[in-house]
Image 1: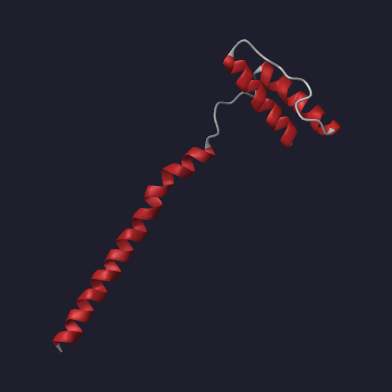
Image 2: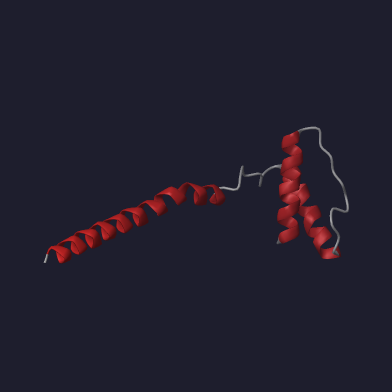
Length: 91
């Protein structure tokens, strides 16, 4: 009888431990998934983004890769152009 009580207590403790651990794992993993959903700033109205998107689409149609190397003075413009180019190339 004593053996059955000990086994029951251990089984209950194991079940509670697994339930508690399983409940924490989605809460711990959630911040990593949220970062993937927000890729970055919205450049859609930026002129250099639009230029990059047009050139990316044209290169995709001609099966080229970065046929025109563009360099901008501002890092934001360069980043926007590259984002637009990749978007135009992939769509």
